[in-house]
Image (cartoon, rainbow, N blue to C red):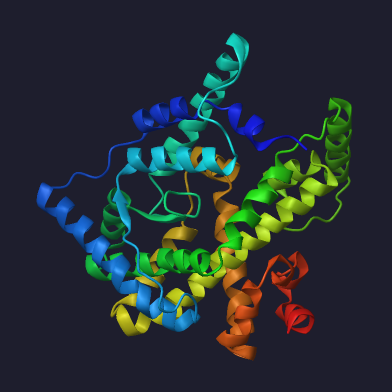
Length: 350
């Protein structure tokens, strides 16, 4: 198997961070008072959200409540590149030799440009590969931009955002094995296994023929994701499925917790949820829609919906305490087919 440091070494991460930070768009215009106020309130909201999230999830009870890190867009880009470098096991140095270094610079520039685009849409993120065994990041310019766009009560919206992101922090801190599970799946996903280009091209041609022949496809085999799967080996496809299912579970669980906790601690939660969902479903300009598809944003939204339905149904049938068997180890995570049919997971695991 390819060493993960070889994978990460193909990118000059420091250059990616510099490029991404420079290309990231400035946040919305705001006064120093408003900026300081939202930063302070996001810190407070992250702490306030922890207890109700623990009470609903029955996870991480009694553990220390770490501080969140409230940052701007360039700082998020730098945090993301650091996390990606750690996740891929890369050393700080770029590729070996002048050709390798040049390739790493080019790939770094491309990575930085993508992260710059993403940086304007991230409200918050729990980074399990960050310092001190993970850190919660909250991007305050984006929070300001969205709460203005939605015309919602700022204090309520900030706490609502923190409920989602704090749930991710609780998930990973209560179950430290999740980070290694993600990392090991990524290692398989990025392993070329010494494959010949002809093998990859053959699988791609087979995929194209199937699409032209009108072969039925599911959500995981359509569009860009289908193209990715078409050029993968079978172990890589299984690794991708593991990552997709884990992402669907984590996002769905966080959405479930937001709705379970929200009414008790966020007075205007119904308005926020309605307007936020409307924003998610709003049509984008053609170019932006293409970019969002290529970067997997639409697949991410699908994860929220499918994952929440799964968690809602399982918790309704067996309760949160028994649902938490899902966090035991990799074998108790749902299979791809079980996401769509929660009773199959209940029958297999419980």
